[in-house]
Image 1: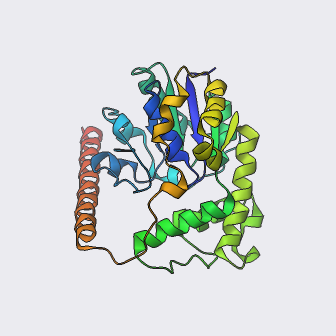
Image 2: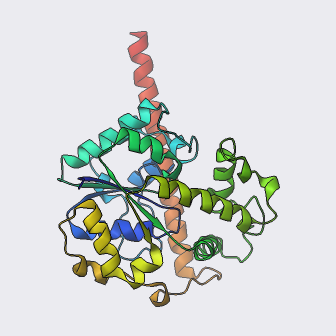
Image 3: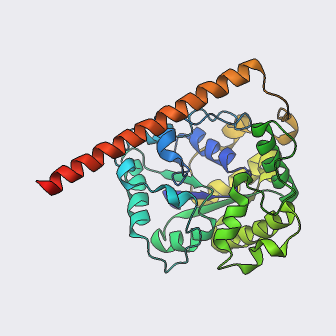
Length: 304
């Protein structure tokens, strides 16, 4: 049993469903993707929820009142230095995660942190938080790829989003491969002919790394089609006290989900997108203004 749980999984693997289920238990204080490179923007202007993230609401609602985040957070954690063995040194990241987890424990007896960017940092996390439980969620390779491509297609409103190219940028696949190739040279672009082939190699490495460190590994299909038996194993592994059967209503299997439509945006959707873009600009302007104020205050202290 552990009062601290990490959920690890690839993008479009079902990790947000796992997050939602932990949220609905009301037993855990749930932290969503605290390493997201746009976190500070989303804390000012909430991220628009994906239509297939059912019952999610505000992804970052639990981070309200975490006043030290702007001082401690570094956007580069979301994109760079993705591989961290157990011996890696990053005092700033450790301080940041300790702040989040410690503040969360001030609000609840149990804490869960879900993040898609920790797969190749699990060795470091295991060393720094040895008593935590790690729950890995994974999805069949082709199904995960299809989901990722469709989400990018819907976002851009077109079929061709470069998915056939080894440099496919959806969900930062190419960037991750470039970041990781010093450790895993097999991920270099010249080793592949298609975007799927490169994704597939990354999937294999991710799966192996999660299998190496996770306390339990959960298949997304089993979670959505054999829920009670599957999630009961998760509950037993982490020592949860919640009633598994009561959570089944929050699970929507793939065949019951609304089909993603790749089409020109409707007038309503265009208006929503314009509104969201305006919010994003406002958030960026706020962050810039705040950074300028901090710099000015720092300069005044130094000159004084």
